[in-house]
Image (cartoon, rainbow, N blue to C red; front, top):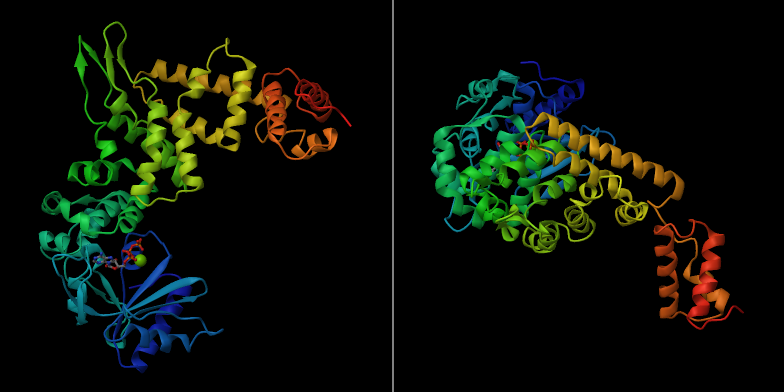
Length: 472
Ligand code: ATP
Ligand code: MG
């Protein structure tokens, strides 16, 4: 078997020599073998399995690398990691695992290659390539992983009920791989996920979210989101989303299924390669306020009045529960949802320049993403309507662009600082400074004065006087 790039060939030779020296057989395993066999060269990490001690092999390998690399040792797991030419290499000793019902952390003993392959999650991840002199480059495939790769199937090597129950994180991994590789989870295996879904509760939320984010960052996240829903896992992880499922009809009036709509919106914002994770989260949560705001108004039909506001208020709790970052990402997602309908509301000739300036001011550099979300939100199947909605947004953007060129609001900084005000009136920091600054900001947004120092200075003097201040 041709072991790919020059760098990888070199690494494999070094590992092979080192293994012979310490008399431990070694194999390339994991994602590298899988991705290499499907022709997707991904070089993030290289997993090396050795029949013996992983740390010992890493130390031996490091002797052949110049300059001498730092070895990261994880004593508790018996693993080690080092980098060669920016390629991460992980070393792990072969193990045999047995599980206890209350934990996904196994009891570990030293094991054979076969034991180690048995503990792998999927047949396509249980492939090993030998680095040993007698069969160098040979593929060791005890569970038909190669055939599953060809058939695009995810299957567990051993009984899937036991595999998922032992380590329920594997359920998330199954759905993550199904999304990333666009593979099918074998029917029996999927049924086991449905059966074992509640076992996910023994997995830490950080590990669940790590997989969930990988699903969201895939080319077509809806594949995974739908599988999460169908397996029952979504109602445990993010019940707010499953509540959007379903269509109700009253007096012959139906609303759309907001769950499927959301999936489509997420796919739409994911068309950009290497997209921004938090825009995808915003798309995912953009309609979560709809389940609690849904009402049927006899003369109007279905209404989800102020669902954006209600939805944005739900974000901090969700972020806290899922241990997602509380700072900028949370604020960004909250803002995107709160404003998700704003551009639509501003469409039309009757919208004032002030309203558009306010949008530019409130959103700043995030306006570009908000527009992406609004365009992604157009999921109607009616081609004419779709065209018209998109055109409306493009027209609005033209107006936004013209106003921005003229007034420069988007990265707005007040032309008058607090210091300018204190100096002019010879006052110490106090409430009046804030009042004057706000007044200047509003006057600029309302187009009453232009966005520059001179007009703002004159207005400051006038407002100061009104507040009982005198220029000194
Ligand atoms: P990627 O690097 O793209 O995430 P990978 O398959 O290399 O994919 P890793 O998390 O790096 O995934 O794990 C390396 C290998 O270890 C996997 O291919 C699999 O054989 C095994 N593995 C990882 N996590 C588990 C698990 N929870 N249960 C069983 N085997 C696992
Ligand atoms: Mg890997």
